[in-house]
Length: 545
Image 1 (spheres, rainbow, N blue to C red):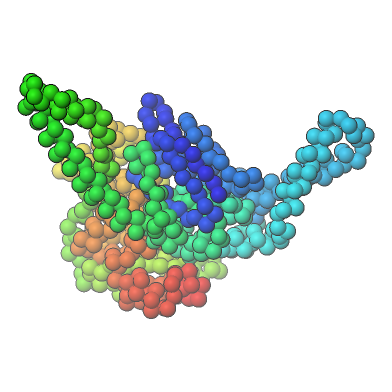
Image 2 (tube, rainbow, N blue to C red):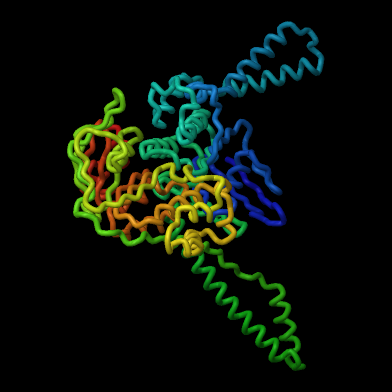
């Protein structure tokens, strides 16, 4: 059990939160929620011990292991994947080395009565107690199992970490964290760089590990699947719900409605009391009553209604120019890289106005098929693009491709043409970039802000075939909902790759499954597809497909 007692964080004369107290029990799986800037990541860092609070403290039993996965990581470049994962056991190895070192020293020392000798005895006793309480394990086997669970192939183990992208490096760090068998796991947006298979693996791991978890995540399905408690940080305090995220939303709505009623009743009472005081303040017979009411108002504790973040994205795609009836027709399309066969014999037709999803684990050909559709790579078979098809493509790393030296305004001003240039400020405002934010350099923007900026670039030209590769990474839940609604209203054709099951639910009406070197068409939405397969997650599909 970990206790948080009267935490407060203050900086620059501003109080982020104060008097926050709660207990984390051994089997709690907590979703930490709240608007951007409420202090969620700060609270996670305090629990992890990487930041000190202004007041208050966090206490835990001796030997408690708290593992923390931040959003941004630094992994050593000079180790292999396996060696880096093995760093999880560095503390145990160091402990064993220190015990051996002390025992050798004790063998040759004869100053049995000295303070130094007693200090060594005390240190080796303490270390031995900790070391021998650790379960004897086959560490190599555990490393292998964990790395493969997170999507690594056995051939990857000997590769240098420098060869991997940021997303894969994050998985290495996640593997290190899980291998330590922590008592409390702290995760800050862990699903941003994971494919569906790995998310499912992580879900099952967290549910079955029996350890405490606290997570910040904008992946609604992930949060709902793993958590049994929700802590909301708002207006400098917390609200604690023994409920999943979806249930918490209902309870929060009820709480705000109740607060609003109490606030309205109190304001009415205050107005009536002030009116009484004004009317009778000069009347001798009412002096005592007036004084009593003045004192009551002075002592009154005002009801506060929790603030709601009402800023929202106004997103609407331009009208799609009419294309032919069949924007994409694939006839026996196949692709190999060197000796690796990605897929073969892929045949399908996408009709005008259809919204479809490409699903499957990384490396099974989803992005490759997108490149075939956009005629960017050579391939086997025939890929026919329909009459008047205008493609808008949003790459997974679209946000990273922005020029960091430019401001937000310059980024859009450089590509805007014609009449649209007079409306740049309005467009930026619709995407929650006010005048001050629009003058910021791209390099100081958050992941979500970069993603929104990259989305603006996509909207500047009318298209009728949208191809989106993981468009929701770094977007908060409300912005994802807005994007989803805009895509539902889009009158063109949509192909989307996403690991976010909640985002795909209700958006797509057809699923193309990539796996085992083939592409399989399923005429259902995402959850209908899962139900048809009589499976409860996509990981099983990918494993059996």
